[in-house]
Image 1 (cartoon, helix red, strand yellow):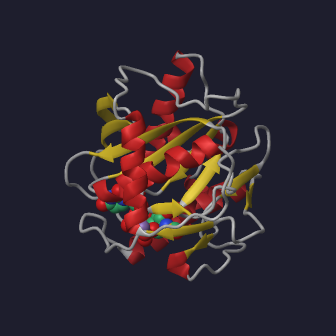
Image 2: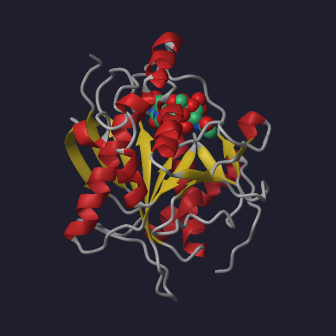
Length: 278
Ligand code: UD2
Ligand code: MN
């Protein structure tokens, strides 16, 4: 199937896409490690999509309905990992993404199918153009900030020094170099600014598509989640110490517990106890 370019992101249309993907894949029983592969070509890259998640089922359906055909048209080999926080403690996105990285890394290695690219993807971010390639460059020091033009920010082109939020893609080497996301951000905000610092202090830089029609995303409208409070002072204090902490806070001191894993026909659901703020 060829790339189509611009895609609509009205909710009805997203709902229809999800039903179509369910129709196509709903019957697959997936007992363990499984990669979605294009039928007619041997893809070069294997892509892991890591989605930090709790209590956003509707957004997840929209995203699954969008990403499956989108990645197929890009001739990617891929799997979608939904990393769900257990309980109703304060949300910690960084710990979920680090846990998702380790889980996908270890599973793929066990099956001799190591992923080439890891895309850390907010559940409510719908890509608007399938020419926005979810394909990293192994060996490069450019980290791809895929969501560089978002409806929430009136599609202003994000430039230098701004957020790296929404959708960020790494090679494993790059992610290891940054020591992953900080584990210290409980609640809303900061983890992406902290990652921006890690990228720079580790000799990496951010790449954004210069054609801002291609990197357009619709963030599905939503309120702030009650269990994801924003404490401005704490966030600012943490970001101030981002570079000092980068080497000791992240993948190397991650202490979360995987409670269950469910390989479903459209994604893998990993339930995680992220611990409690201290
Ligand atoms: C912005 C950033 C986001 C993150 C956040 C601060 C962009 C486009 N997005 O998004 O990447 O940096 O600010 O933390 O710049 N989530 C759940 N359940 C919850 C809470 C969060 O699943 O109860 C997940 C979900 O994948 C969500 C993501 O965490 O998309 C970020 O949370 P948000 O959507 O509430 O944050 P938002 O839209 O302010
Ligand atoms: Mn959001």
